[in-house]
Image 1: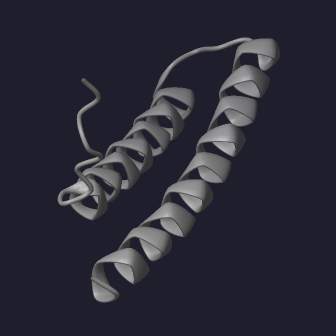
Image 2 (image 1 turned 30 degrees about the vertical axis):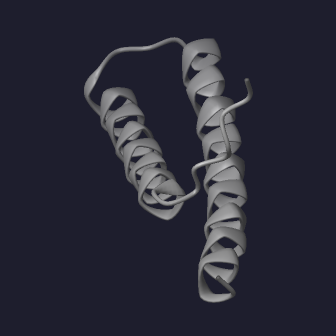
Length: 73
């Protein structure tokens, strides 16, 4: 039997994911500043942080959708 979709905590879960991703970006930036890295390693971190920023935008869009769903219940 398929369990019904429980969306009751999706907004909070997504907000936590945004916060975790922002923390990962900050830690990566600090690592670049405080560690000797090759330019290739720095570029990899820069690219990863760009993907993280894109993820944050997606999470925020999902949060808006979930809040809308909640408000219409």
